Image (cartoon, rainbow, N blue to C red):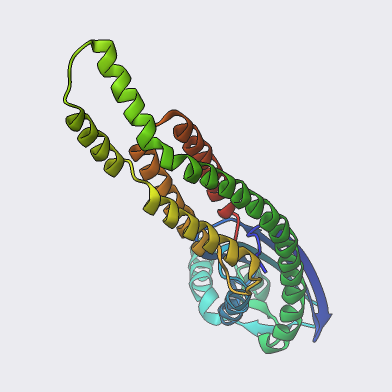
Length: 286
C-alpha cells in the first residue's frame, strides 16, 4: 500500500519504575532522517530507538521526542572527581580569608552527590511500548494519506493517457498537414519549385517529426507508474514513481521539440502540466 511521508502520533507507557511519553512527527524528505530528543543520557537506547524506526519506515524526516520520568527511588552516587577542583579551590579560599574549611553542604552545592537513575534495561520495554504506540499512529496516518494520494495520482495518469491518445491520433496527420502548408507557402511566394523536391522536403520533415517511439515509451512509463500504484506493495515506491515521472517528462519534452503542429503542441503542454502535478504529489510518497 502506498504511504505518504507526513504523519503524527503519540504514545505513553508505564512500568518498571518508569513513565515514558513519546511524540513522533513525520515530514517529507528524500531519504530517511531521524532526529531524536530525550535520550541524551542513554546512548545505548538511542541506537535501539533509531533501529526501531528504520525497520518501519524507508523515507521521511522522523522527529522523535521522548519524555522519561523515573517513578522509583533513585540511588545516590558520590562523584569525587567532579568536585575535587571545587574542594581544593574552596580550601585555598578559606585559608586566604581565614575561614573554616569547606563543609559537606558546600560539596552538595557543586554536585558531589548526584542521583543515579535505575538500570536502563528496565526502561527499554516501557520505552519500546510508548514509542511503538506513537509509531503505529504515524503509520496509520501515513497509510490514510497514502490512499488519498493514490487516488489523485491515478486520476492524473488517466488524464495523461487521454492526452497521449489524442496526440497519437493526430500524429499520422502531421505529414499531410506539413505538405499542405508547404505548398500553400510556395503558392504565396509565386515561385516554381520542383514537385519532387517538395516531396523530399515533406519526407524529411516526416522523419524529423516522427514521435511514435516517444509516445510508445511515454505509454510504457505511464503504465509502469500505474502498476506501481495499484500493486499494493509494502515497500516504498516513492523513488520509483519519481524516476518514472522524470522519464515521462523527458519523453514529453522530446515530443514537444519534434512535433510543433498547433494541436499537438497544445496537447503536449497539457501533458507536461499533468506530469508536473504528478511529480509534485509523488514527492509526498514514501
